[in-house]
Image (cartoon, rainbow, N blue to C red):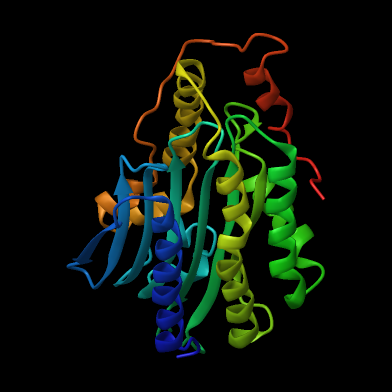
Length: 301
């Protein structure tokens, strides 16, 4: 096998532990731990909190699963791999803070192997992942810091990676039916195996390791800001966009559901409360209208 499964798994489980330990410093109780097994092969550990002091809902999930045949969401863009057995592992997190001035954040890093078919040369592997920020009341300095952290994580593996992965993120996290970005972006990559296993794995680790430094200052600056019913109402309305993206476009969600994954873990990314309104528009010049100014991809650094 090209991919070193044991090393990769050890990294992902360690990353989950480190991130949860940091998130728990904001709470008055530990995250729940939910270990599970998958009948088709593999399993995982879901670490989550609901109705927390700082995080209204948050999940940091590790999974390592196998299957006999690639599901449509994985083989559609790589038709030559259709019918192969597969193995996937990684860490995925979504944090929905209680305070509307703290942005929702998503991060995942993952490894995927399509097993060698009869007559094929070898297993096919790739890494994927990234992180992106979804504010409700945007602060430019938060977006700048987040993007600088992403760039710093990628630069050691190649100066071309941040511009490529930033553009990929802007394209991927875009709600075409709404004609707006999900948030202020970050970086996103998939099918990455450039430079061989060691190079691709090192780059993926660098992204995972950068998450806490990218998000921590934002939580620390915003979590104590006062808010009221108006801000919570707008937060719920904008969370509806998050639900729309995950159920319509997100490849990870679709892959998980199509491959018979654990529904509770897959849908942990959903916000605890969301709201939809018919043709609602923010009042011009209001703080809520400010969000629309940043939902068009821009160069933050």
